[in-house]
Structure formats: structure tokens, C-alpha cells
Length: 294
Image (tube, one colour):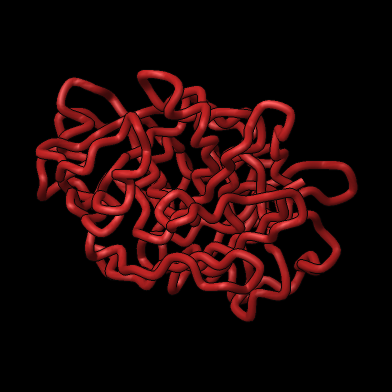
């Protein structure tokens, strides 16, 4: 199942893609009496029906909206809380970030967390503001986004998968010069438009757990990053177990799980983004998230 948030006739709605991914079934047609459900509302309602029952409705519904007639938005345009991010969660990326002054190349013994403001999170084909008046070293990071499906705390490793709703693609846009001029990464990761996510959420029933998916990024059609989500230093079960030890997660919370090698800062000389560049982030079984730098 592929879920999306879209704008149609000047109204934002949540829905499902039909089987051939050409049409949208509004969430209100799946969850009766729920005309104004946003994506978080869909996630909260999802467990009131069996996934197979939802699939039957999606595959038999004839009253669809043509995908080409809508504007696809980020699946959760306004996350209720900051996006939770992991730094240095792929070994090859750990080795390449030694060029960044405030980031050492030691393999982390515990997950490195930081938060990213996304208000809003921008979507597929939206423009990324380069903030070129203050940012000189603009970078990209393709990441698997994990979407939490239920309220959870003190989750065991074995229970972690049950807390997941689905997966999406994110681009952790980063102002490296701002990031390295502070003792922490929050500001350099949180400029407006620096959190593209999308285009869809893929329900976890579509993807084997733990996900072992090809993950890539291209800049102007040049392959920059190439890895596999199975190569994370701290896997998704560990991340959820560790995060929920003392912290409650809620439906719609978003976790960005780190990026493989090939970011702009990792090249010699660095290959930073500039206005006009197009970044394509691809994850197997999910799709492509594309954004242009303005």
C-alpha cells in the first residue's frame, strides 16, 4: 500500500494510490465517516481495519482521482514534533566525514541523535531554498525515513517492528558551514525547506523486515551515493528500542536513519549544491524523491 498527502481543488487530503499507481482513493472512502483525516489521522485509524480489508477497498474502488490532476505533498507536511535524525549510521559515511571540522571519524558506540525542524516538510518536486545569502556549503543526504504507527515506550527489540507504520524517502539537506560553525548540528540541518520527504509512505506490509533496500542519490543525473539500508551500524530495531527507553513515540513521528557515503562534503574537493541543481533520492521498493535547488 502506498499512501500520500495531496492537494486537489485547493484542499489537502490523505489517500491511497490505486493498484497501478495512476489514481488516488481518498482516505474518506476507506475509513467511512472520516472526511477530514490527515495522514496522522489515517495512521491512527489504520489498525481499526485489517490490512487485507483495506487492500480490497483500494483495489476495487472505481471512484478515483487522477494522480496527474493533484499536487503531491510531503506525506506528513507538518510533523507534530521535530524529525528525529541519526548521524553517522553507515560505516562508509563515518569514514568520509573526517573533512568536517566538528565531526570526528570514530565509529559511534551509541546512536548519535539530533532533531530537525520540518515546518513544513517539503515534498516531491518542491524547491529547496539554498539560503545562498548565508549558506555556502549546501549538501544532500538520502535517507530511509521510518514512520511510527502507534504510541510506544520501552519497546523491546522484538517488538520494534510492531511500532512501525511504514517507510518513506528523505533528503537531509544540510548547511555544512553552519553545521560545523556550531557545537551541534541542529541549526545547520533545520533551515526552511531543508527536509524534503516523500513522495509516498509505503506501508510496512510491502517491505520485508528488516529492510535491505538499495539506496542512492544523484545530482544532475550523476550518481553520488550508493548503499543498502541493511548496512546501518544501528538497525531499525535497535534505534526504536534505544529511542523508546524513557521516551514516548507517537503515531506520525518520523525517524531519519542515516545516510551512506557519497555526500558532497565527502569528495575532494567537495561537491556542494548550487542553485539549479537537481537531486534525485531513490530507495528500492519506495520510489524517487526529486527536488531542485533554488
